[in-house]
Length: 139
Image (cartoon, rainbow, N blue to C red; front, side, top):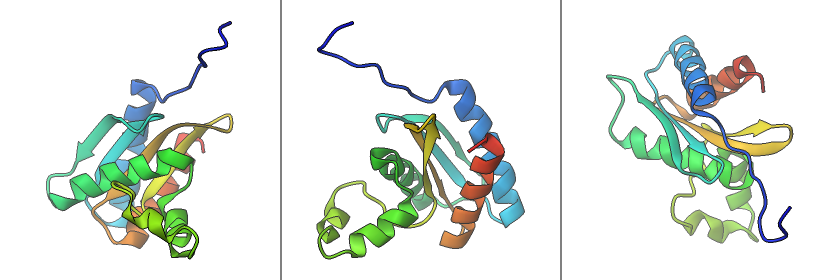
């Protein structure tokens, strides 16, 4: 074993596809057509789905929500509270940080393996669909 490297985990393509399917189902129940982005543990796009009637702006928002959630293992709803803190408020100016509900870390055995971002509904619909999808996914 080397002292100059470490092994990291990342979501598989198959797991990302399952989570996309769970999120589509949850979004339909919540009543909106989503854009869904899944990033790997390093924040790079792993899987993506855009509903036919979703907005163009929702594409970037979903990807950035997933990136933000994977970056520290915090949901974007938690980031919203974090950037309201005077000591951390400058984080809102970091490129790609998106502090609005609908982004979730994807965890396995207590470690971050990716991020899920949902956009296209209200903040409450995005949050509800993500929570439901992750429960069905086993989180």
